[in-house]
Length: 77
Image (cartoon, rainbow, N blue to C red; front, side, top):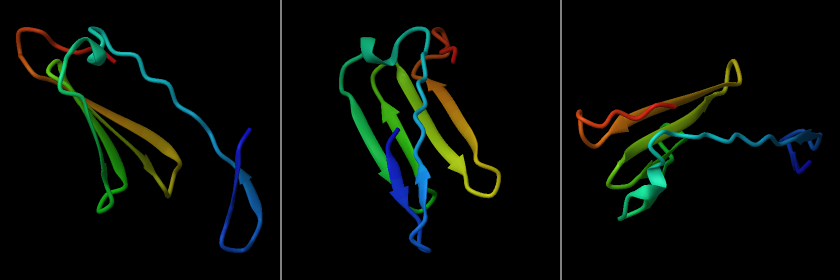
């Protein structure tokens, strides 16, 4: 597992999260991935829809918010 150094020079493990959507976001074209430094979130957007992921620092909870490009074709996480 990869590690990172905290401000007090202690090492801590980094985790990994895998998300699967139905339909797959990667079936669409026009892929963009955006890091928003204001709220520390990552948003992936295609023609199918978008998914925004962020970690709540105070609880270490991982949040994911999906939005379909069309109401006729909802996205399941």
